[in-house]
Length: 240
Image 1: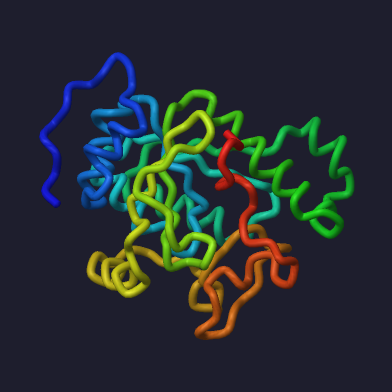
Image 2 (image 1 turned 180 degrees about the vertical axis):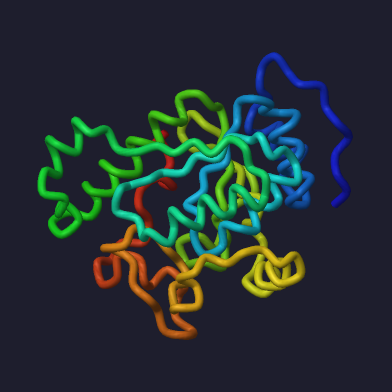
């Protein structure tokens, strides 16, 4: 689909239904341009884990507007490789507004004094270290951009390009992309890969709860392996 005609920045946001009618089947770059520079100008952020497949969306956002806020949730349980990769990617792509958010230290002291909450209750740990920090950061924005894709897992196989999530609008520009398309653009553009990808980590989260997966397995099998858990909680409606 060709890009929509530029819209005047609105004083009040369009409804979810209007956004779907205008942009519900738009190409990724056109959708990002419309959301970042028109519909939600200064009121939208990209939420990125700087994980295994994050580089493609980060590159697209950098093309559209490199000053777009990029919210990075530093859970304080991440792989060191992820933090270093964040810095490398931001510099290489010219992203100028990386917003690093962390869990509230008072909450951590009260709920996870020894840092081992993840061994007792992974849902509570994700809530403390990811869901609540993101909710606080999102107070400034009306919409957010995610890198979720339908092929990643059975729980994501029907996500739309635009969805309503609690009080926010969520944009999923790569929802319809497949792994071959991601791999191809990374090679074509010489984009840097997360260093753990070649070590068997196709999906990368916090170090204690991420493990490598075998070829052919669901790409998110290594996240909270054996616990019947597939999402940290930030992508469950009504949480923001």
